[in-house]
Image (cartoon, rainbow, N blue to C red; front, side, top):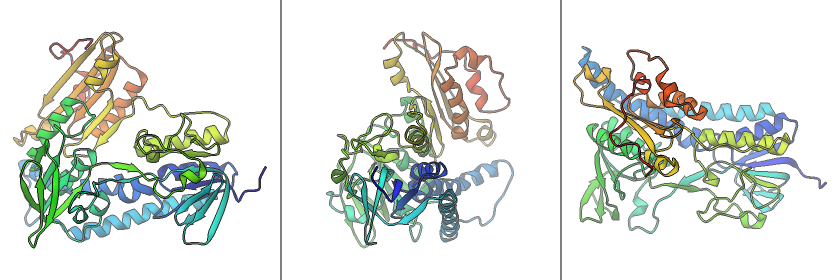
Length: 460
């Protein structure tokens, strides 16, 4: 066997890369991980963690409105953006430090710098005059925001990554995109008092989600003051003395102080040296892997968003565990991507697990039963608010298994985590019905839905 510097070298210290490195080092292997930015990756540094802090900060304004309906009064309540940014950055630094400390405790060497593959067993740390060899290599470099670089005026725009560090809160923002990142940031800025416009080229937001969820959320976010423009996209952006003028396909011109493009993310594979190592990309530009995360090079694996399978932090962590079990424990494993719950931290938030109604109609041979309820939650009904919750169960008409759960409303991310257990376990609608309700709660609706949606059962 060749003499290598490390048994395993990991490129990327995000959630997936860190988990794989730690587990392997704890097994007594010599491991190093390279990170070109900060330890923690997209989720901790410039993704779901700081974004959730921003969501929670922005939700306070709505909570104050609701509180007044309960008899509370608030004088001179105000939000200070610099104070929030400072507190957020302190917490992110703390979390990044914990990740780095855990690597050190496990015996992993942390290499600060950008790693580039020179061949299947060799990486170069750019600018550090250091070349490293490894028996096995794991790529976990994640994804990066994408925007149309050839569009006139695109240089004046930001992405979600810059949104975390705006020097001041704008008075007006226009967000281009209709996915979860666009919808979440629209809620954030609107909640912080920014005049917010969301523009999306498609017929409705959240492409790929259940149609009832998409329609319901679009209506609810408009109640929060977000202007939604669908079926249209940019032609160009013009910078003027008063702001950024967005020229749209339909002839509209909208001025904003900040324009944010949240039009998708792509695998971070640029300048990694993949070709030199024999690592191929698939047709979508992600690293091609087999079910066990092995690339087209025998000694190189890839996990997380760089493979563009299911781009969620907990999935990357589970892929890391499966990699470790397969490669170092002689226990071949691959992650099961069926019935993975997810949440959109929009305002109101969305929780989803399993199949949409359309997906279920395509996969359930004898049709589906659909149960839907829309109602004003107790909290809002008391104050006279017209905000409504959507809950939907999609059931295989043949087996009566609940194959999809869709919730739009307060605390839906918390509810969907527990609902996911039932869906993953394959429980039937009768078993859901046999579960006693907790009253008074919103979640009790999930076990008290009895009437099928009219004409729901169909083989489609």
